[in-house]
Length: 435
Image (cartoon, rainbow, N blue to C red; front, side, top):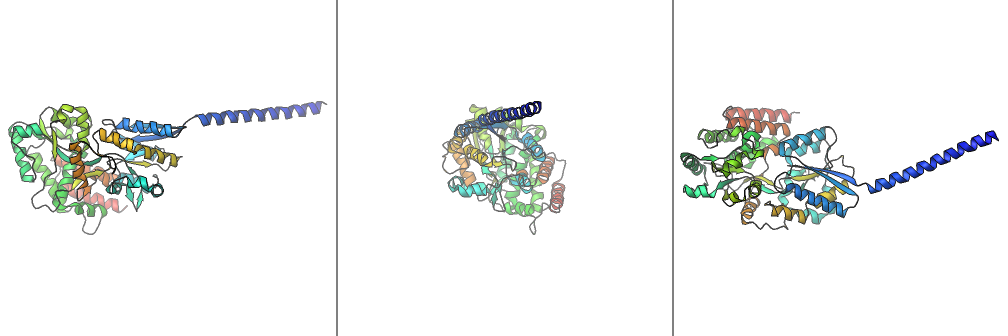
């Protein structure tokens, strides 16, 4: 009897334990069912209503997909690049993230850390066909698509203060010679011709990119990047572009201290607002920033295309910029890729694109009209351009892109000769190609 009781007690205890485990498992399953699945989304949208557009889309996604939650994070340009690099290096990237496409995204793709979105686009051709055809270039590698065009159609243009131009009898220059006359006139009246905040380096890079294109056309850069026969960053075109930059610097074309001014805190725009500078070469997003930041000045704002140069082989209709500006991708570590793609679709749906248009942005889609006449002109400039060259620091592999920014800043600072800058770039390109 004692043995029977003892064994029965043990059996009862085991049964009770099993029942308790079952109950706990049921509770856990219920709790799990009630807890939202989390999709972490990172981007660099910090200007204007950018964060709100993303959050609004996330709210719609959550409503359409009960049980899911989106954690969105918005970080300013350079800090965002560093944060993304650390996260990927640690194997803990966000599920959904944006980038500028080009070389840096290609690095993540080559290391198998980004999802190929081509199968999704094949299944949903209506979604794919909404976007402007040229928007896919920056995120297509080996005929596979790794990002969805999300933000602005953007071309770098020279913004200018219409009132100052009218005051001094100036007209938008179409040639380099005309531009230098404008520089001379503005200087003679104590006004800095250009506002430039070049602490960030990519800001000054725009001058270099345009000069290379105007002098030699897009093929010179393309051949150098692809290491095609005859392609070299020591090509005379790159050297001459550096010489033109230093001509501007020596002519006093920029407000003093330009290499130490920070674009991210409005260093160049403040010069425009105060009337201390008349022009700024910047991406089209600047119009949106200015409209939000200083509506009164926005009324004085206009733009013109970067001028042609003597004997240049490039088409003066070419632009530096991007059709998409920002592209949304999914990391390979994402546990629920299908849900992540649904989020990407919501981030780029008609409602999101309409909100971007209302925020003075030009959506990279066919079916959302741009109503602002100013933005319509910017849109036409980009869409009618024979060539749209992606920003060098995004097109190039990361290390080479950083060197390009460093050497360009040094050209502006007159601490490096155009020949030395070109030689450094070519040596680094050769070393990178030989990895």
